[in-house]
Length: 459
Image (cartoon, rainbow, N blue to C red; front, side, top):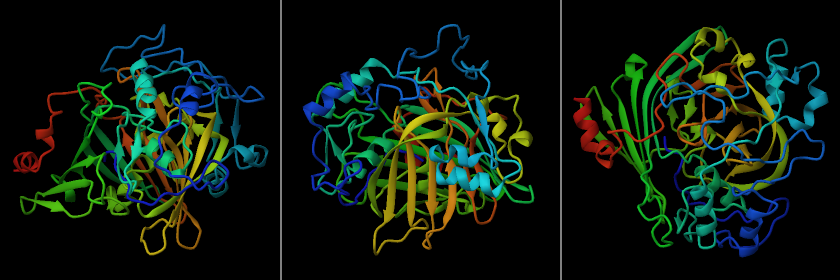
């Protein structure tokens, strides 16, 4: 569902590396905003490369389709780095050599599948950028963006990166929720749960996201977006075919009731409002993942205490154009135990490490979550989720690429690994279905997402 939703959690007052007793809903200071034209990029990432040159300086030299790439809207995205070969491949046998730059989940996958799981590491690139208007919005609104007192909403905020220089875990979490800058998304996504014996339970959904922008983006008291709409129509499994869930999230409200959702049941042909939709409700084939697992984290964070652990250099899935290539069939990609990583690309990048610990008195399947946020985009690219005993239960990877038509970064196939059962779930697969449309279509109106619309479309 929509990634841009609200939280009612208390302040987790934590600066990177040290606890600080500060108001987490304070505005970004003029001194921090000035850094966005100096040592930091307009998104708040470190502009310079790393000391050994394995992470390059941010160039942002490409906006939209790169020079020399033959692409027309509606086509699959050509890989601008297709000629590159892996610099090296990390295996269970040489893992210790690279351990400092691996997540705990990556290490667990290498250990659990020593003969088959590989991490092919390619040259790192920081070539793409957002529109200048996006960067202007960040600077314009950064000086006045605040959280509501309950931290469940924002006031006077841009459509992306409301806190480019975060001081607390809550601020970093808001950046994560706003990481998907794409205003409209229409897609048919295949889904698959791959069991340890190789059997697959299939799913398929029609997916619609709409975040309508305001008409006057530079009026401080007129937020660019106040609601984000989502609609998911189940096509498979057949037992759930025809189910439709529609919802909208309000960004600028206080209180816990910021998401409204309705479900159409094809058996009863009735629409019911869902009193609470999110958190650890099961979803997908077999209920394999939770609602708030979408793109690694989605929804209210009110059940967790949030903390910025720090920044690290990590091998993460990046520039994964092959994962949308129709020449790669699911039979080759969805292998036993884990996805076939020969079709994936990992690069070394700096990430924010964001930790969520379940609050006392609250319930969730995951007692702790560790999210790795790409510093250049704020997208979550990896996540480690722990159960109540402190055992690593699920480790997830969310490969990304730069979408030329949307001029934004986009999550391709996402993989959720159950380290206890040995099954895994692949979501957002498009190799053998239509190319997603990342622009406004005739369906992108508020009326399409209304309860009346899903009642009419379901009958």
